[in-house]
Image (cartoon, rainbow, N blue to C red; front, side, top):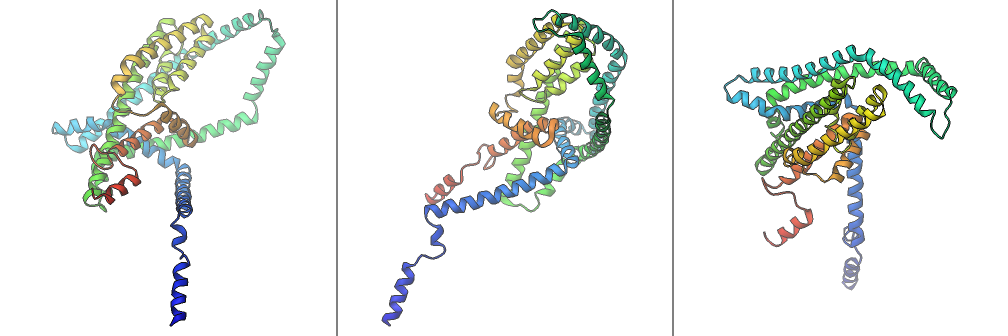
Length: 377
């Protein structure tokens, strides 16, 4: 009997397997294992998404466009237009606008390309003369060697391989565009039904949370795209008028480029100004290029100080550092398209966090939740 009591006392003094994880070091180890498992899961998901960009990117673009067009389709339906007809009308409006802009760009490039080439040749000659007066001597032979190097590159096999890669990229673009249009049609027609189907496994508070999440994502993405489109249109019109007054070739394509680059926050306006200034420098000269830079800066300042705070205040409440990180991650994962999609996705994630526990109740840290449960709240 004495031996049994001694054995029980010894067993109580010996820590079990669960006790080894109950102290501070054990909790740190548990959290470390959980963090590594979560990182492994995220890595696998990101790897799978990067391998399926031909499907993922068109679907994301369709989701963003459908969110932006949702008020228009809803307005058609409220005025007793059949759902299928409202979807087709909205889709044809978008495709018509995009097709019209593309046709205008192609028309401008075809009819102004020869003039741009002639002006570029003259501009290179003027640039060569101006370089001859610099303290650092640049001889005609050095300039000719640079031209020869460019010519050899354009006729080399590496350039041909790049052209073949460009053809492949064009084919992928067309495939993705067709897929995007098809997915956009179904999102516009049956978007709420699709989301309801995805929420079928959930009930009660989880179902209500899913409803809040879906509504906030559509509202945030749609507001961001519509607000950015308004700001981009103002930038494109203002800078385009300035380019036309200055007589810059390809003013319409450059204005369209300004509109597209405006969808990349922080750096888009700068890139647009650089492209416009480079074309003006080659075609007209350095003085005109400086004037174009001044026009770009003036339009961006007016838009940033007066228009953007009003239009974007409710649709994008992110710190500039968060926007910069999102742009970097999106660019690394999916190039320019990722840079365009990264910010609305980040804004949507932040919007979801804001309504996670209620319409006006954001998500709370797990530690705070446990403390409230222990206090009986």
